Image 1 (spheres, rainbow, N blue to C red):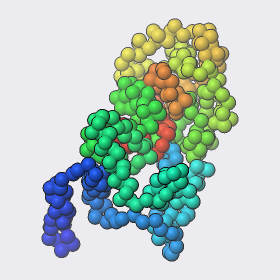
Image 2: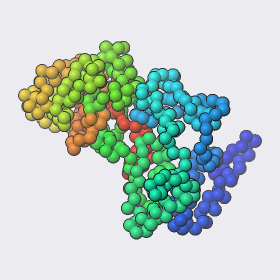
Image 3: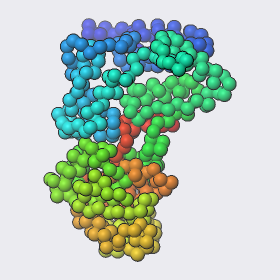
Image 4: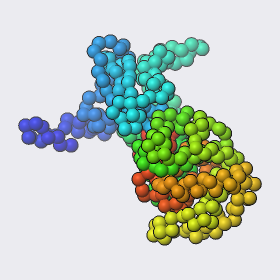
Length: 406
């Protein structure tokens, strides 16, 4: 690698020699993790950090206070956090007042995010349980024992016998390193929580319009004229996101429709609360579409120019009369007509869902039905419309795209 110096002379980085030394080193069982997981992964980190990586030591929070901008990991809003750091220790925090996401606010979970990095019960050194007691051991001993144990499993059962569980809380660089480590080990058995979290969303949305991700953004909800929320309770799960929903209600007089089997704190803010039987999401959406098609409220020009297959949807929806929908979902047809009328007369509207709609045996069907509703109304590809899919953690999409979900 060439690095341009301030004097204008390009010089070769000294890391090349280190890489050559690693390439020539014999890797035995005992040193596998040390020289692969930590050295190889560490060299990749060095390449990304300009060679500033040093040995980690537990420290105490004393001295001058530095302010560093970070991101809360507790949900997908990704609120900005201003961390107060003393001697490398995170000692305090404030919300990011200029953040377009949390708008200077914290929820109860975000206010406690510092405990991830600095808490009384957090380990500072490797510990091993011996004779029923936790005993501090050295990093060298921990790496050797873990490395020997893993290599024994690998020798006896092969590399695919180990399950590598990453996290959607990883940033992109951590996700990249974790995936590379697993590949170096010799397997692609790599996962994170999105396997059961929003995997049905990824498949359903990708099969509907090509890419399984949120189409708009939290701040774009400010432009919505109607909000249809199903399979989620953001007032508790994504508290800061509700600020954006309530802003649309206040600024645009946007009606909020909440569909949920139980009356939640989010439903308490709704203009229209729709109670339905768990697992009958598709029937509920088809019931709404029945009224949209019956009254000609669909966006005919959008469907003609942008949608394929809506004729087949129309044929299927025709079977779901208000009486049949009420029999299956328990929701009166008169209420679903009111919901359809509201969505049709307040465009663009956004559809929001979370894991209440995905973690079902028919979760893929649910997510596709939500998408079809937006296509019928012509709410896709427009500001204030789209599908706002609330993920569970701050970097589900990044960790997935970088291969941790493989």
